[in-house]
Image (cartoon, rainbow, N blue to C red; front, side, top):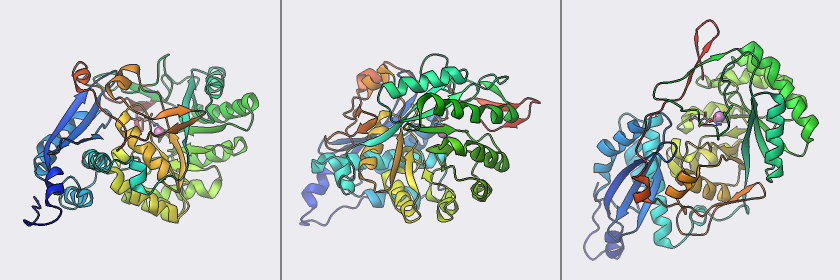
Amino acid sequence: MNQKPESGHPEQGASRDREIVDARVIVTCPGRNFVTLKIETRSGVYGLGDATLNGRELAVAAYLQEHVVPNLIGRDAGRIEDTWQFLYRGAYWRRGPVTMTAIAAVDVALWDILGKMAGLPLYRLLGGRSREGALVYGHANGSDIGEASEAVGRFIEQGFRAVRAQCGVPGVKKAYGISSGRAYEPAESELPVETVWSTPKYLETAPKLFERLRADHGNDVELLHDVHHRLTPIEAARLARDLEPHRLFWLEDATPAENQKSFELIRKHSVTPLAVGEVFNSIWDCKHLIEQQLIDYIRTTIVHGGGITHVRRLADFAALHQVRTGFHGATDLSPVCMGAALHFDTWVPNFGIQEYMFHSDETDAVFPHDYVLRDGRLYCGESPGHGVDIDEALAAKFPYAPKQLPVARLEDGTMWDW
Ligand code: EZ4
Ligand code: CO
C-alpha cells in the first residue's frame, strides 16, 4: 500500500511531497449537518472532500475514521485511481451509500490536492471548459397553487431560467418540498417526522399546478418537478402523460427505481423527460435505465456516487446513450460538493442542468468558496483545485445536532416511500 519509490527514482522528491501525513473528519452543523474530510500532504498542501449523507452523517464519519483514514496515511496523494480502486475493489463489502460517500470524500480531496499542486482549477484537469457557466434550477414552493406560482415568479425575477415547482396538496399534511418560510430543510428532528400521503389527491393537484404556471409565466422558463418516489409505475405513467401539455424540463423520481425495468412502463405512455438517481451510488444502479434509454437525465452526483473518478465514468457511459447530467444539489450537499460539481459541470460534454438551493449564511461562512451565481447560471472559480475551503475554527463553533429525514404513511397507516 505504501508505494515507496526506488531510491534515485526521478519522482522521489515530488512523491515525498505528495505523501499523505494526515486525514481528518470534520463534523459541523452551521444550520444543518455536514461531514468533511481534510487530507494533508507532507508538503502542506491539503484537499477537502464532502462526506455528507443526510440523516446518516455519523455512519460515514465512522466509516472514514475507523476504516479508511488508517489506510490513507503514507499513501501517495497523486495515485487517485489506485486509491479509488483500493477503497472500492479492495473492500469486500462494496457499494452502498455509506461506502460510496466515504470513497467520494477521499477522491474529491485527492483531486483537490492534484489541482492545487498543479496550480490548475479542477475543470482543467478534467479536460477543460465545455461551456461558460452551468444552467441551474432553483426551488420554488407554496402551500397552494397560487403561492407556488408567486414563488416561481420571484425566481424568474432573480434571473433563474429554470425552476422546480412543488405545492401543497389539499388534504395532505406536510407534502414533500413545502417549506414554512425558510429554505426547505426536510431533516427537521432527532426522530423522523411522520407525514401522511395521498396519491389520488396529489394526482389531482400536480397537473393543475403546471397548467397555472404556464398560464402565469409563459413557455420561456424551464419547469421541473420532483415526485420523490411516491407513485407506482402506472401512476407515474399517468402523471407523466397528464403533464405532457405543460412541457416539463423533467419529471424527477416518478417511481422508486430499485427495479429499473419499472421505468419501461412510464416510457410507454409519455414523452415527458425523466430524471432519476439522486439516491444512486454507482453505475450499476442505473445501468439498465441508461442502456435502455429509459431516462433523460442522471442525477447521481459526486458526493454520493464515489467521487469524480466514478461519476466521470458514469457520465461517459450516459453520453453513449444521450443521457445528460442533472446533478443533485440540495442544501444537504455541502459547498465542497457543489464546488467540485460545478467544475465537473463546466467540463462534462453531456451536461444538462445543475440543482441549486442557497446555503445559509453560516454554511457559506464555514465553507468559503469562489463559485458565483449570475443570470441563472453558476460559474466555478479559477483558483486551483475545486475552490472551496473550510474555516475549521468557525466549524468547531457549530456542534453536530442529530436529525433524520421524515417518513411517509398512507392515510390508513401503511408505510410508504418518503
Ligand atoms: O429530498 O436532498 O431533488 N431534491 C431532493 C432533496 C432530497 C434531499 C434528501 O436529503 O429530492 O430535497
Ligand atoms: Co429529488
